[in-house]
Image 1: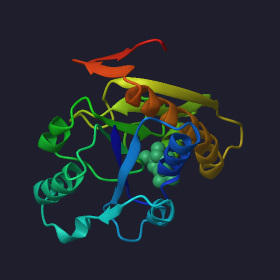
Image 2 (image 1 turned 30 degrees about the vertical axis):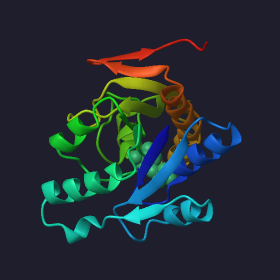
Image 3 (image 1 turned 30 degrees about the horizontal axis):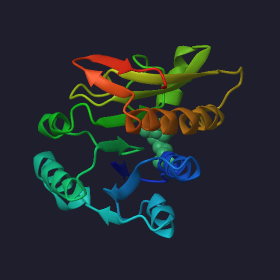
Image 4 (image 1 turned 135 degrees about the horizontal axis):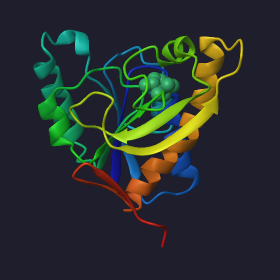
Length: 202
Ligand code: GRF
């Protein structure tokens, strides 16, 4: 089995997945890490681990459709079973998303359906919620609203800063994302219409 991971920046979630795949000897390889930005610092980690990397610079394309089709062509050269969005900061067109229906996961730094979109930690602090967290979901054309696979909650502390809260959430992202990807690789996780099916471990 093979996985393609898409990043835009730091790539710490990608790193957590790569580390888990190696440490737990998953029956899958990370076929490539692809970024829409040449300056994504996560590319260096992937290259160091001998993982093929590619950059499809979004700024070189004048329309979303053109970018998405170039990205899709690149991804499909690796024929992945699963596409993992890990801090990939692009809104994807419906045809692109539909092409990977049931085989594309994303992580979002909030307890969805609360706080879709950007600046989720700021949104959570402004709303005064006592619990915040992260969500792994299947990607559907409805941004940040795909069927939920896994969530982790963290407490919001009094006097929390956006940065402190983000760090607490990120730590949990690094736990739940590798786990969810592994479920998929092990054939336990699938999308059935709009329902997530997770089989118990055999
Ligand atoms: C993570 O918080 C992810 O949930 C969000 O952007 C951040 C990316 O971090 N979408 P990294 O690139 O994985 O380090």
